[in-house]
Length: 273
Image 1 (cartoon, rainbow, N blue to C red):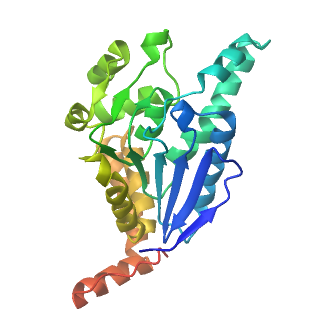
Image 2 (cartoon, rainbow, N blue to C red; image 1 turned 90 degrees about the vertical axis):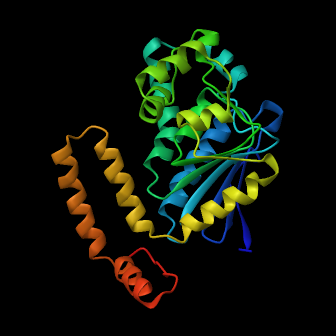
């Protein structure tokens, strides 16, 4: 078992540790189902950027304490903000900054990111899970967009994320109806990659994160670049973009190691250079 090393997040609302090459971030506000406060959001954004730059980290695992993943924004603080004496422009700017601090940082990570979802993920919390590259969920977890229930249009990239994962028609359905989505349906429509029994979630998600952490991190980053570019590019443009990145990986030490390991019938030892 990899050694656990605690990392100071600056707040008790976010627990952080490394397990070998895996960084584990745990939202820790169980009394509010891990709703995102300003302190939690700030700490989360900071550590996402820190771990993305750390050469000793190969993947990032995001989860929640107390049986929930994340209930979204902190409703109490949202209510206070709504009463504050701010102009429309100031409120837009504040929301844009908070979105970029967490969801923008998560999407920008070039290492594999995994959401381990033990329970409810709602609103901005659902967007947080969807912003990860992969999602593994307990069978008892539930998803809900939630915005329509309080007459809000959505934030934190939820429209982009849902459309990318399930298409425009299904995204409309999920946003308009705001229904509770169980994991059987979530897996069927492509919102989660794997569903496991609740008691096996931690072990399964850590095993997946560890597997990815030992992989070719440099190549993973360029794979993510290719996939992001493909969202808006024409086919020929996408192939041209891939060609440049393929040659970059072909010239890397990781590729040479992979070829040698394949020939020698052994596990490769990637160092992402």
